[in-house]
Length: 374
Image (tube, rainbow, N blue to C red; front, side):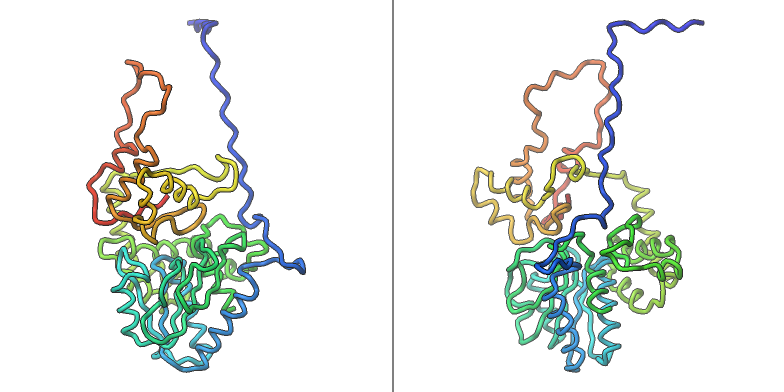
């Protein structure tokens, strides 16, 4: 049977839009100093001060507290530092680790009290993000902040030293920064090309398969995603591991990953996508966008009421913990759910609307705090 000739009134389907070509991460242009040397992974003066701080800590032989973030990047940073301090001569029994409770930051009063209870002379805060604040704890101490999240020059606790990769593209993870300080796979992903300025990792990839490294990262991240938020289990496992295989075969980490996978299968997957690099013109700065939206609020006190944890993280992926009422007010400023002007009425024969929508996502039961990652 012959096919009917296409009607002349029908419009030919549009060609698919070419996918924007995004350059390899390691090719991100680096900044250079006056002598032409690349500033990476952090400014040279910050790197030198941080290395001297680590040396002084090891030589002092005093109580030391390590405060790493809960994910693979933060925990890896902490373990690299811990092992380095021991190799430099600091007795292991003088080193403690403090892991934050779910939903807290190092600025939360209960966490500051818990850190102070260790009575540390030296405090290392790793991959926690940073902001201008009082001293890390309310007792005499020396603190070093090691980070890669976006921060202004004065966005650090009073009296602390800091080294940050946030202004030295391509931005290194906190674990990679710590690795360079202490001379490593965090949240750079599995597709990153380990080309300059990143270090030569060929010896690592010869010793371990990419799958074992990827699986090890997944295992480290699993406990923080469970209902029990068992980050101490991940810290204990990473501290004791001799290699990625130890993590892949770790009984407690496997149980956590199984729990997470079962929960993902049980619940309907919800994803909020935000287009940035490759879709809009540079520079991409979600932090600045969020702050601009808050500044446009009818009530000019919104920005202040959102608190110091609002619009933190990275220019490409910002987040924060804010009160529910203020979050809803921010969503109203963003006009989430508002029908664009000039849209045509829905045709009767349109397909059934998607049930799992952005409005459904934001309209679900609220809690006392909302962690909104974009």
